[in-house]
Amino acid sequence: MGLSILFGDITQCPADAIVNAAKPSLLGGSGVDGAIHRAAGPELLAECRTLGGCLPGEAKLTKAYRLPARYVIHTPGPVWQGGHHSEAAVLSSCYRSALTLAVEHGCRSIAFPSIATGIYGFPLPQAAHIALHTIMEFLYSHPSLDVRMVCFDESTLRAYQVDWNMFYQETKPKHD
Image 1 (cartoon, rainbow, N blue to C red):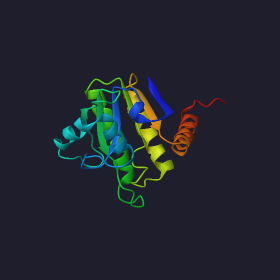
Image 2: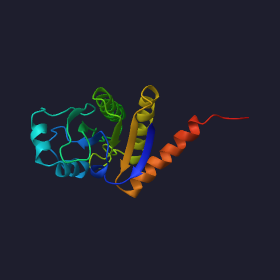
Image 3: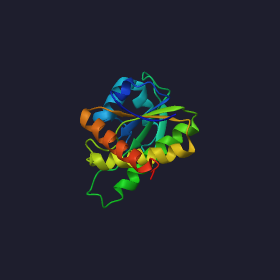
Image 4: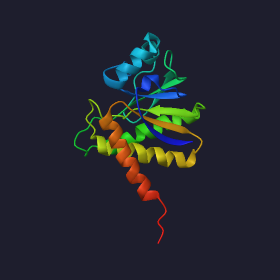
């Protein structure tokens, strides 16, 4: 199916799985994490309490409860520390781990927020590049998966669109 970049609220996005840019505790927080927990209802927090947290770059799956999805896939992103502490590799692992869990659970569609670009401070242009390239690499071996990058504000949407346009230009066949 491919990748689409959308402007909107991930808690309203119908998909088999919605990805939560979670805190390592998985117990809710601010930003996307808080919005997903509020929209899903208290049952999500109760299930998350049973999971024992999650390391940055890894992912864990729960039911979605009141969200328009079957599952929530929780993945803590890296805290930006200047780019010299494997932040890029951890961020890429967030996307790859979430995509792998989605496929393992029979999902045909998955919606992502921009992971780690809020309070964790990952620079948006770099995060967009890592996210889109990791997703496209995964889609090469899972072409029937429908991936949606859901951008909550216009600056995030622009960053993803700019990187997508550059990626498309890089991969477009060149004619003499």
